[in-house]
Image 1 (spheres, rainbow, N blue to C red):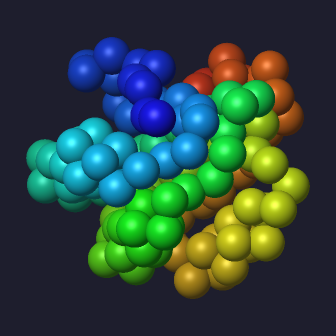
Image 2 (image 1 turned 180 degrees about the vertical axis):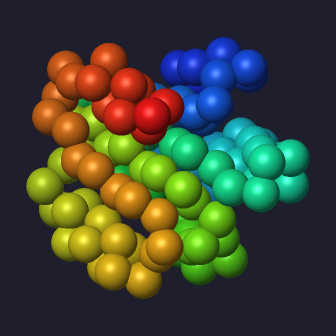
Length: 120
C-alpha cells in the first residue's frame, strides 16, 4: 500500500509504503502522481518512507517499479529513502549509478531530515 505523506503543494512527493505493493499502487497512485509532477515541473523530487510491515512487491508491481524507474531515470532530481530495508540498497546503488539525480538513504525515524534534504 502507498499513502501520501506530503501535501499537493509540496515541492517533494512524499509516500509511505507498507504491506505488499501491488500493481494497483503503481497504476493508481505512484506512477500517475510522479508523471504528472514531471509533466508540470520537468523533474521530480521524491521521498519514500518504508513502514515496518513492508513485505515487498507483487510480481506485476515489481515490473511496474522497474518500468517507472527506467522510463524516468533522468527525471528524478532527488530521491530520499527513509528506513529502506537493507536488501533494497543494492538496487538503490544501481539506480544511483545510472541516474542524473541524487539519492540519499536515511535511517528509520529521520523523515524530517530526509524531507529537508529533498526540499533543498
